[in-house]
Length: 165
Image (cartoon, rainbow, N blue to C red; front, side):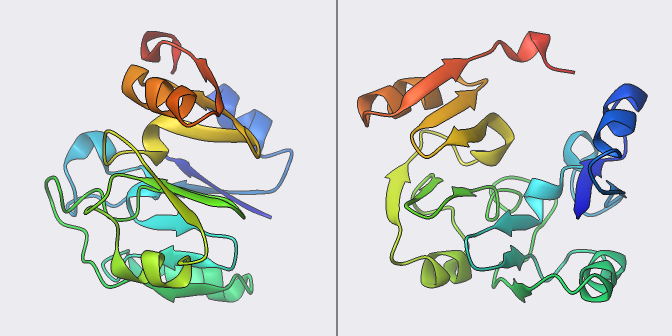
């Protein structure tokens, strides 16, 4: 299993995660603004059928996916240096739902996941602030996402982003 992580992640996190698979330290210097240059979720959306990746992702990562026989398709949207060009792939999907801000999702993600119910989120950086624990239970560091999940009958556990390293 490949584990893609921001290259700036703490050493302890890298050490712990490397016990579960091959660690890939992600960096896209010069494509997006520095604060998110190591965020894989800006370039990659994990869907139930395959990864949907930005055409502007550095070739080193597509080569790595191919080498490891990981299915992927290219999306339509080019990731750029500022919002909203940095949000197109920042979705959360599972076998039932697609969580993202309407109007900000790459068209290929929508096409390949049209059987999923869209749960509109209040912001386009959904994946940066939401992780699924089980089908109906999530962890978030965003109060707006928490409120929206609860409104849609999901369970949500909020953690302050100040406590996240």
